[in-house]
Amino acid sequence: MAEFDFDAAKQVIDGGIDEAKSFLDDPEKMDSLLTSVKAQVANLPTTVTGALTQIPTLAAMAKSYVTKEYPDVPVKTIASVVAALLYLVKGKDIIPDGVPLLGLVDDLAVVTAVIKLNEPEIEAYKSWKQAKDLGAGIL
Image (cartoon, rainbow, N blue to C red):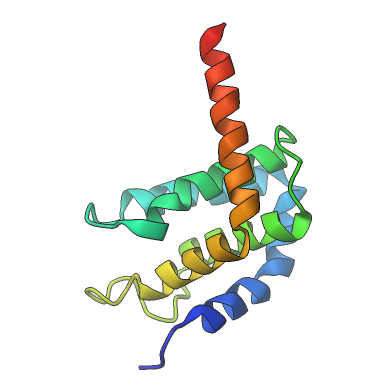
């Protein structure tokens, strides 16, 4: 089996950028994708930790961008996030998810890569979201 490392994960993300951009101007397509992501996350084993636990944050960031609630992120960043989400739901994994123990390795690598490549922007989104949620609780 070929090694699936950061460079391979980055290639997957880069290869999905064009398709991902088509979702950025189409809220219906994005909603459909995010519904699929939510279902995929629900099927993850409860023992999953680390980067895969960040999938809901990535999905929320994409949704906030598309609804223009949080536009303060570079298009390349949000497109790479959407490309990673697309990889998770497309079912064209390099290592099929049904393979015990190894099935999530490529998914983990892709999510880890997108987080590593966009960490400052993701952290800024988390801070914005936390402040927004706190502000909403005050009213």
